[in-house]
Image (tube, rainbow, N blue to C red):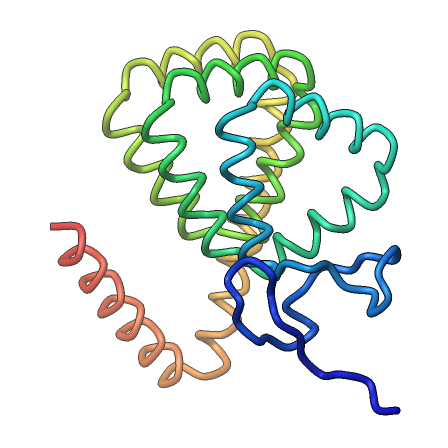
Length: 208
């Protein structure tokens, strides 16, 4: 006897592939009677009508099945990145102050972790976006950021001096390399310089 490849939903009465039904080991065919679409619609209505009861059930399920919940969450995030970004944007727009306060508390509780995350975000994931954000932030709050920089320098004198020493050493090395390159191939050096000037002028026009 061949296995059925579709079944009829008891709610919408449409015939759908078995993949459109949730699993249910208690049934002969191993699938729920209603399709995923109808089941999800019912769940949404139930959650809207019984938020406290639904949240309590969700908490208990998550506590009893932490690994499964994490895995389901990972799969959902991987399958719906744009949807989640848009949802996050809308939530932030509607709850900006609440989100900022939550971020401040999280930073206060885990400053090292927050700084490490910020470094990875800036350096690896979104360098251009991070620089643009920094430029806009400085343009909006120049005095506030200068004051913060002064306080940081006063509290971390040796660290700032060490950074300055490394920066100067790197600049000297870069100048030496440029001199060597110029001596080895002056024409190529002139071409590179003209390209850099053109690039700088393009960036200046974009800013204007």
